[in-house]
Length: 255
Image (cartoon, rainbow, N blue to C red):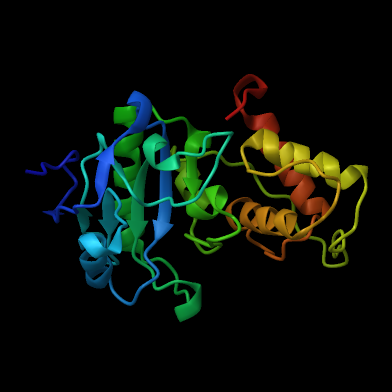
């Protein structure tokens, strides 16, 4: 029987879609998603159906109610094909929280206050119990930038950081006249930015070419860390924000 790992859990809905964490891994990453369906009830129903082959540890609905589906000690199936800092089994390395929001394809409304309060409380609880470092609190789009947008640019990462959740640096303001490096452009600046993104954790190689993968990764970076303009272009605001984040890591350490 599934027992809540957190006193904040209001309901339990066991999902059959889980397994053991591979290689005796312990969760050192917190991955935040949005549900991307019409209602939280539909999300919970789908995540608890065997035929869906997906799950998560928690769902937080728009009113702030928290439902647990998989025990934290187990490997839920929420990340899919993903990578961060060289780790490709993100499911074994992480705890997954689905935050109800219909998503970009359905209007992408703001996250309600009651929901955000609950998300903050749950994240703090998980982080405290597992010792998760700030730079290991990530968006689904960070680890799967070519496939995912969630939780998206309207998710208030700066607010969470003020509560001790996640890694953050003040974004450099966007310059309207700076349209960034053009698609398919190449050169040492592109390679330098790709190297910095890879060092921070993103799954990208330093090819020196501003290709489709680079655009996806830069877009994911902007959604999380520079949401004022999400266009996938390497501009000075993006570069400076990335430099600030790297400099703000403890002793320049890797994530």
